[in-house]
Image (cartoon, rainbow, N blue to C red; front, side, top):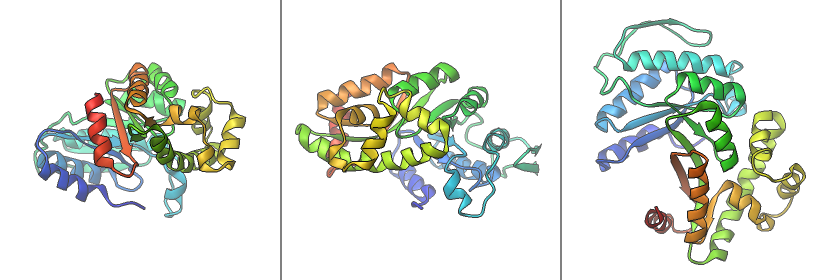
Length: 279
């Protein structure tokens, strides 16, 4: 369990003036849609209209360990979007959903914006189709290569497509690769295990990366430093500035509009500066 995002986002809102502040993602199984609307509305007000919100119903296994029944994720998303949109529009909302409901609910304050961007995290075909109908944009998880982003964009035609990826950039190529490999190897094991239970997770890894399934299984079992360049290119932004520029361009060509980088090297501030110069 990580730190709660609200405290950090509030601090960012008070310390910045221009950048967008995105939450990615809140899960209605952990925070009722009415509470989501209350919190994001307050954050949008605090940041003077700079908030954006990602919603998703993933992380099934960890949530079940909390004793929560999350067996209807798509229905939860439909209910969540309906309730949150209605409340942020300043309406009194009565909604009887399959998973979540409200009766005569209304925010006690006037929301900063009735059209605050609501994006949906999705990966499987049904979730992608639902995102196309109800969301203002799509969010794609770590460990999804540019090929999957292009596939998802062809289904959802999103106005915004947000993609997560780990990042290390350095003039010293060997140093960058040494830093990214253990991070990527850990993520690969997590997502490969998920893929054994969730077909869509396996499809996003294998079918759209060009890497054979047998090579994934071998990479998961091998030491982190044995991870080859195919995995680095498919699932991270890592290497020299020139290599990182090419990897960023691949995501842009796939339709990604917002590339969310997690800087995992020894000097994240330096890496942020170098990436800023690239773009």
